[in-house]
Image (cartoon, rainbow, N blue to C red):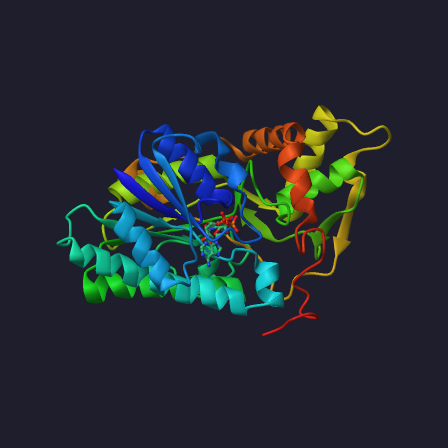
Length: 353
Ligand code: NAD
């Protein structure tokens, strides 16, 4: 089986690429190599005869047609996106162009290819999305996002992802393109770009710098180890029912403050400071505008229909992650020099169109 993975030089896409190659699938990694990409994320498979890389931009329809024609994939797993909420507040235009127009181009390139090849039975277009499309939940633990929760996106990022989800469903209904969707909670793990909360906390702690927590730290997220997400995605791509969506989550709800305190406790054990504890570095900063209060996924459908469950708890996954950052300074150190990394973004003061 040949899988075309878009965004395979990013955080989650690279986990999908590594796992798919390890399972013996042929993989074509299509990525524009934006600021968020690292080809070193897939260095472990780069020399495999199962792996090919295509530098292409999903905003470029002609480039997509060429990649489809050259590689003739059986399955498309579409992860390429602008993914950082704070950047979407400062500059939403890239999110509209890549996440909405880029997904439209992917759907049209896939549809053209699928028709030209006689609408092959097993062809699949798997669109990878986020739980942020569902908006914000109240604190009541009984309230969870299900596949039928109405969409209520509240940031430029989540609105652009919601738009792309709607396009994918429309191409399934209108043109019969065999689509499947998944909406996942917050991921963490190795190769996480150092502008997202968990790597920022680990790397700031190691540098003895402040650990910034937005607002009062009470916002709740449902954390999933990235390799468990990659496993779920391959399952959905191959066995998910056409036209259906699957919510993927770790059932690991934590407030941001609890999460940061857990990381600090792991670092205190694995890499103690000379004086004091890492928790002493925690600093509360001005909240993100429109910061959603709580996300929590009900993963019953993927558990019961596809037999998936996560392999690690958040404590186990965080310990693996902290160890990985301690052992892989060669990976993360150069990324700290990339544009915007280490700066406070998304305050609306610098917003451009
Ligand atoms: P990421 O930012 O780490 O990686 C995105 C990748 O897409 C990068 O390699 C980048 O170069 C590529 N890309 C961006 N614009 C492109 C374009 N125009 N053409 C081609 N390639 C382009 O993102 P991630 O965290 O790995 O997220 C991957 C997908 O999963 C996204 O669609 C995101 O919405 C979704 N998702 C992420 C999370 C999370 O917690 N990170 C949770 C649920 C869903």
